[in-house]
Image (cartoon, rainbow, N blue to C red; front, side):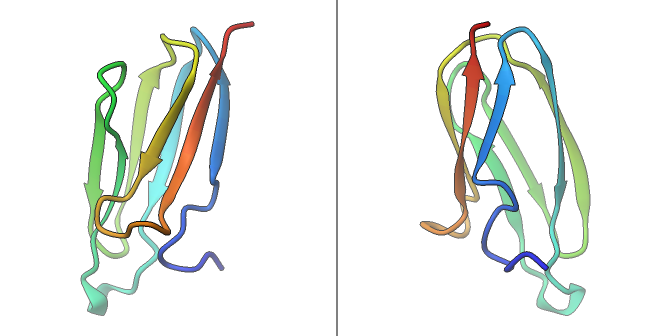
Length: 89
């Protein structure tokens, strides 16, 4: 089981031009009513998904720019963070 205030992956590696599909799950029990976000606060992507306890969503975008992007949960810093590495093949 993944601890509640960490992402299961602290890095995601994709190739430029590929479609990215992230299955985002909040594993907190419903009684906690704790929200999590998957946020990339960069003009290249501007992803911000908020989900409540025991919910899930799919985040999709095209990896259009090659470089490193930070992703994080805006509610649980500094522990919930990672990096999206977009490679230029």
